[in-house]
Length: 224
View 1 (cartoon, helix red, strand yellow):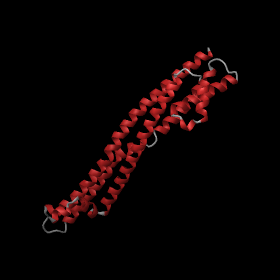
View 2 (cartoon, helix red, strand yellow):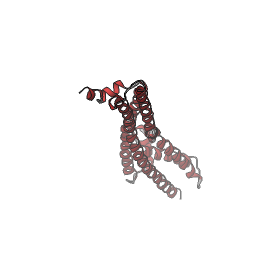
View 3 (cartoon, one colour):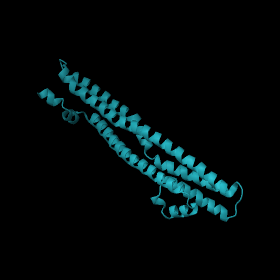
View 4 (cartoon, helix red, strand yellow):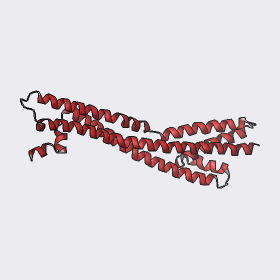
């Protein structure tokens, strides 16, 4: 009964050596941050897709683009990424026409403005992805460090014993394996989330890029 108590999860965590406990705390912090970023990124992507759908409905409804641009300009923070990309391009197009720019140069400003806005929006959407990638790749090795230390500590403890038994070495090995398990627990969700978010962001990027090309074609027809 005593052996079972000694090998319970709580006992192993509390009785682990200081370096192993430090490794576990680091991995716990990585896991908490990873889940926080996963939930926030999931919400941000969902919001972006909903805002993009609403803007595309307004854009393709056939209304006056200048009126749509003014509506977005007055409340930029309330509109989504694609709406802000459109607004930056339309604003530059209106400025170019007022300055009586003609020919292909009339579209150079809108094109550059939308590309710059596109890059800013994608940079914002990709925030914290690097942390998830790092957590997924580094956490198993941090856990392995705790495992190596725990096993080493267990065998060092055996050196002072005249007779080594499984019961004497089991707690040290068990605490070492817990460090590995916590490392995997921190890494696996981060890797899965990183891959999924990267795939979704690739689709969003293609969607934004296609809109920029289509909008430039619309402006080109207005110029001609």
